[in-house]
Amino acid sequence: MRCPYCESSDTKVIDTREAGDTEITRRRRECLKCQKRFTTYERVEGVELIVVKKDNRREQFDRQKLTHGILRACEKRPVKQEKVEKLVDEVETELRHNDSTEIDSKMIGQLVMEKLRKIDEIAYVRFASVYRQFKDAKQFMKEIQEVIEGKRK
Image (cartoon, rainbow, N blue to C red; front, side, top):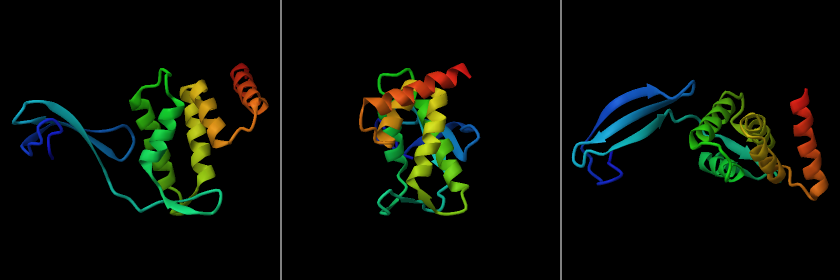
């Protein structure tokens, strides 16, 4: 493992732990050359997931793309990066436990919205507006009203 600060390959593992209930191992490392510490994450490489888009195009599941979309929805909101990573981990784990390696993009969107709604309602509405391609303010208001009514229940 190379140090991200000085590029030295002389590093040692200080601490190892499982990252939540996912299949990820978190390792805290220290560079023996510059003495700085950094964290790495290790995950088992699973079967390639294929996302089936609305227009029936197929593309490889891209964790970074999913993370980026969620981060955009969470922009300027009090949602920590760790929460977003955990959400993406949970979504990816659920997708990998699916019987098929081809996943409909609608399923991914629904999973993200379910989890995002519990974390931050504004980020949820932002994500939903892009995912569902709201055409006008009425659709926005309808979604906001559902969020408000959901809180009353």
